[in-house]
Image (cartoon, rainbow, N blue to C red):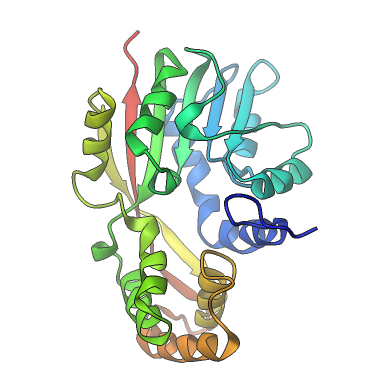
Length: 267
């Protein structure tokens, strides 16, 4: 069954996310986030916005039998795929602005590239801090600002021209909290001061420019809004715009950095 959930995602879309986005973009980040959140053997960990569970699986390998990892996401389609891949994992369907966990339930809380999609970011941060134990750490990542990302800023321009401005805004949406000071402001609004914020270097690697475009548009927010003629036009423009990021083998490789905030809860 491929009925969309209340997030507008189908299990098919979630499987595409796992198959295409993870190897190209997301698989590099779980070890980094685990280190920042101080995820170690025996700890209880919450993975907020777990998606198909890429960080959940990483954390399970780290905490071992003595620890626990709970993946939480609002999308039932994402969770259904997460459960298929990791049937022994604990997964809860819930909204970050109303987490169904008791105060001080976890030693570490991680939220990877999810806060920009949360309706009330400050409230979400407050909830994650509430369930964090004294002395625990929270790691929260967003993408660096669009202005610092040549590839995606160009893609926004191309999509806006070929489709419409609203479609371009959807491509820009994931970068909404990457501007300087935005994350610190969210923490301030939640009533705490963030411990540290830093930009971490990352890469995005796709089999080709066409694959990059089809993945970003066909397997994500614009999946039902772009027909094949539009897709062909976007790919054609992208191949002209992104040639500098294409290797001799035809693969596309470009910088894709994350801004990561860490909060250490006082003991």
